[in-house]
Length: 126
Image 1: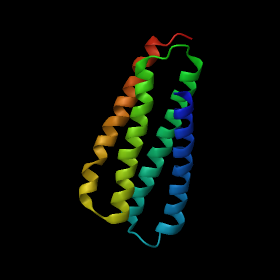
Image 2: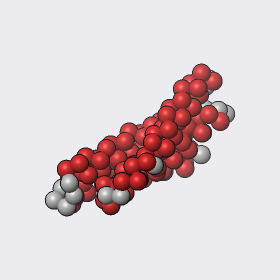
Image 3: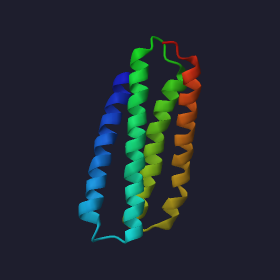
């Protein structure tokens, strides 16, 4: 699990940098200011949660028997990034407003991930 989460965190972190650069250089003249802001929120939250996934990977690597809540938090961070950031990217690039209705599902996944990480903190023995 450590290798999967570490690899995915690295890829998602790198992609968030690429998305931020894309927004700053390629999108600035092509989409509205509001769409650009939406895209940048997606990139920012992607980076925050890629770093959180990195933390989960490191914790799993240091714990002999990681709690299932810790593993669940990693998967929930991944799901949250895909749904939350992905829907914001799609919304800003297409202008299809209904995509904004999907974004809160990613936010719920983030909340559940942070909650699972908090629960894990009480059962981890260092």
